[in-house]
Each structure stands twice: as structure tokens, then as C-alpha cells.
Image (cartoon, rainbow, N blue to C red; front, side, top):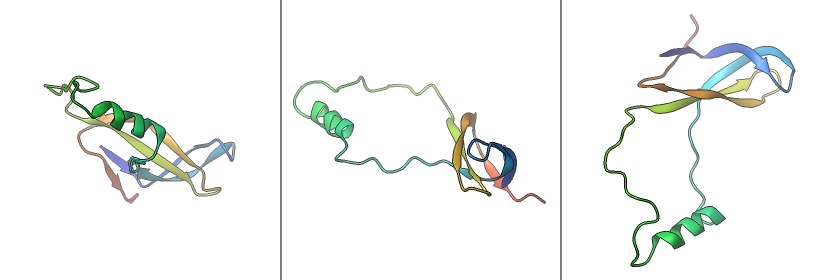
Length: 94
């Protein structure tokens, strides 16, 4: 799917439609010292079975792609709900 680099859409901070630059959302690196991560590691270790069953077959062939929209007026960043795509292309408006 092709997505333009600039989209005019609603900005909740400006409370009006403004031009937004479009980027692809990418999850950040997980923090090793976060409470949930420490709990997960603690539960995973030892002689017992795994915390959750290991998945044998993977049903989905695509991942949900989330768009990150940055307002050109105030710089507010909002996310647009992800849709399943094989390929996402952010293209120049031309």
C-alpha cells in the first residue's frame, strides 16, 4: 500500500485539521530493568516448564503496520490504528 509523506488530518492539540508528516511506527528497545521484564525473566528461568506455551504454527502472515503522524504546526505525534499489510511504502507527494 502506498501512503503519501504528508497527510492533512485532525490534530487533537491544535483542535483543527493540519498537515502531518507520516512515518512508520517502530517499537523501541525493551528496558531490562522494567518491572514487567524482570518478572518475565524470573518466571522463565529454572527447571520448570515455560511460562507460556511455545507456538508451533504461526497463523498470521502479516504484521499490523502503525502510522506515526507528526503535526507540522505544533509537533504533536499521534498514531493511526494499524492495518495488516504485506508492504507499506511512504511516497513523495508528486
